[in-house]
Image (cartoon, rainbow, N blue to C red; front, side):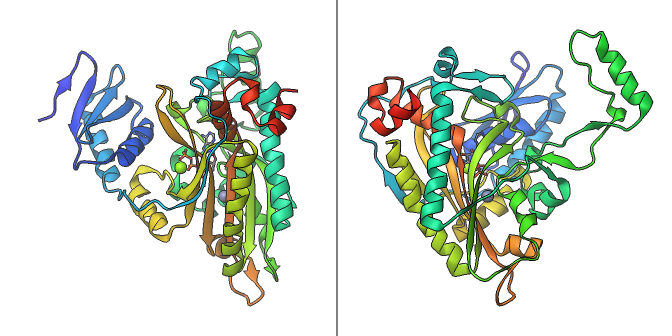
Length: 402
Ligand code: ATP
Ligand code: ZN
Ligand code: MG
């Protein structure tokens, strides 16, 4: 049944069932994690998977693996009713700007290192800071949020407690060190002292003892809450450095390996966390109006790893525990897409139970969080206003182009 096209090293595999564009998008995104021999999987007409293989692939083996991946991915339930809670419209009537990433590099405002990391300065930095500061001020004035600071590394036990390995095992980054061995260290030093490029230590000379780069802004906050009793609800806010191994999906400011998140965490009883979630909506609205962008907040689900995706997405959608801030922007091909620029999450008492913090009546406390992806907000704002300063709201342009 399956056609093998050796000339292009592609395999066509019929999907176990027809899927909509939402699931097709997830399949394409997660396909970079299927096999070292698969470059990517594309879905055609919702019915067929086009598996693009790398040179030297054993096609039978690759096909079997792709089929196992597709089998679990098509189990996803999609088409949940999307509820929209915020819908702001910009005043700027100019067209969306296509190719923001390239333009920012061309202007010298951004440097793309090529592996999902960027450096930025000038108007990009000023806008990033402005969005971060404005969000922090709104959280402080509307919610009495206290400032905090957390490390960029996190240990595996904490991530395990947060359930991260169960949901997103593909996105984790472990930190490796050279073993504490005089000879191994000297061998590494000598090899590099006269080499042209970096030579990494031998595999057996690297040890990974469980330090990871933090992959979700709120996680490092929870160990600090252990043992606490919350008489009344509390809000914390900070700028967190976040790392996700996105493999070949990295793409400019849109999908980075290393990015910044303005995080808000709220802890208390159920009424408190529901109330804060509600109060966060007008804050997002105010932020979007301040930089004058089209913006929506709507119900959403997380991109879980393939094997657990169907079950976890279903649970998330059914409980309506995740809302996403979606800001219209452009894909590389110029078509409009909704960029996920932040998420508003309710965790129930999951973290309260796992990390041992309670409300006054001794019950595990509930938590929630709001994470704003700063670089995506910057990308969306430049997409919607372009590079003609006069199209930006006065209060913003007076700061970022000054
Ligand atoms: P996506 O579905 O795009 O992979 P997500 O839903 O997993 O993102 P969250 O876990 O909700 O993202 O993270 C909070 C916010 O962090 C996102 O809304 C987004 O703005 C930002 N973000 C997530 N991943 C990246 C990334 N790779 N590069 C830049 N920003 C990101
Ligand atoms: Zn969070
Ligand atoms: Mg998402």
